[in-house]
Length: 285
Image (cartoon, rainbow, N blue to C red; front, side, top):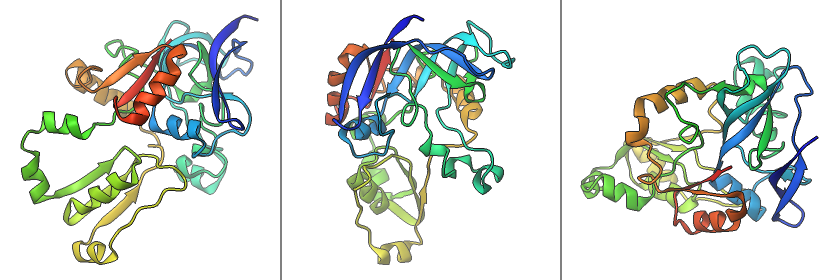
């Protein structure tokens, strides 16, 4: 069995280590193995590395935003072939509990965020990755692997560049604010910016111990709705359609403040993300 480079996280020592591991094999008839091309570095990874987000309690490979090229498929796999460009949905459910059977696998007590590839199973910060076939999606030919990886967070500086009249927007308020940062102060500011009947969507993952301070009177007065969003169930096909629609014009890495790194640059990548010097990091493997 061949070896591959990987970044393993040690949850006891809270450190990342470059290691050599066995290349995974498709043992189950429903397994898919892919040669990782790009793997996202997001705020959740930063929280895990800092020890402020739940994860597997023994050494594992981080990375839950993954795109790559299929190298091996199990005998039951018929929707994906070797050589296909694919992306991986890192989340799944047990398919038996009341949440899963009602179509809400993201709330599953044993699946969902509790079984995520790259958080509770080996992920994509490695040369190869394995995933169940039902969590792997073939990319359309016109979507490159680089664009098929990860979520984007827009910084205030980018907003000012894209929307030079933002002061007018701030003065009038918003009907909807979506926080993708997980920063408690940003969430508080987002609620402040809502006008009457506004909705606050908390999508970013904050550290477990963090808290926010809100005014119950303002929530009552404005009839504000606050919505938590976990892991976007059944959204991959819609997401790929949006990628096709937006194209390179709107999803250019440089424009969005995204920087690519090698696996050996992981310390630099995490530090830049932590300091807000980049909106997103991506490992090119």
